Amino acid sequence: MAGISVSESNITRAIMRSALKVLDEYSSVDVAIVGAGPSGMTAAYYLARAGLKTIVLERRFSFGGGIGGAASHLPSIVVEYPASEILGRDFGIRLQDMGDGLFAVDPAEMIAKLAVKAIDAGARFLLGVHVDDVIIRDNPPRVAGLAVYWSTVQMAGVHTDPFFIEARAVIDATGHDAEVAAVTARKNPDLGLTIHGEKSAYASVAEDLVIKYTGKVMEGLYVTGMAVAAAYGLPRMGPIFGSMIMSGKRIAELIINDLRS
Ligand code: 48F
Image (tube, rainbow, N blue to C red; front, side, top):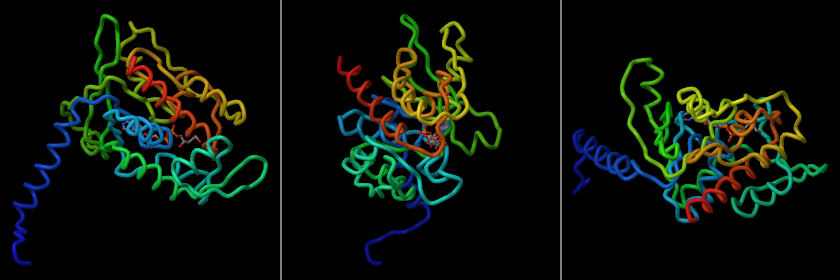
């Protein structure tokens, strides 16, 4: 391989130079999304498409959140209108009409295409990072970014200090535990933020309520997807994903509007 110098130190230097450039560049962003599940990836696509500097922080080394495990490991999930139309039109995901207003989707295709669209629109994903805390500013009180650990460090249970990412808007897309909103409420009781925890299943009601309550919980901090149900004590809906898509799209629209005004 003439002209190619593959030595171990060159491999290391190439990785370090490119990785540190990314971490440097993304130490300050317009929007930091915690969680690469359906709501987080949908939001990432619309935010990046609008030209906002967007990073998605995901604890696992993979995308998709709850999509892959969907309905008890079965290779199918369902969405309803209008999410069905959005998945087909904006993400190129194939849908099978199952009647009763329900459409079946291949979970692997949905994971891949949500991720590809978000990345191609300009969103940057950081995998294997665990968000542990927020940055707070006062006067007026607002969330101004995140404290981040490598997931492996967090799993090892050893103490290191985090690195920080400043953001004009933070989205909690962490799913059923609303981890970012919960830690914000726990560590800063003076803020008066209460996280209620989700209720038992009531799919038809939950789908509408999650979309309706999607939004800002305090300055700088927004919730989408199941984190909305956890934040406001709404029922869960099980393996139907329409509201996750609609919630991700809605939070992107709200933030685009907030950051431009
Ligand atoms: O759970 P998840 O898929 O959240 P979602 O977008 O969608 C929920 C549905 O999958 C399903 C449902 C609705 O039909 O009930 O469960 O609301 O994705 C959340 C992602 O966030 C990551 C987690 O690994 C998952 O991929 N995550 C959670 N906490 C953290 C985190 C954290 N503290 N730091 C980084 N990533």
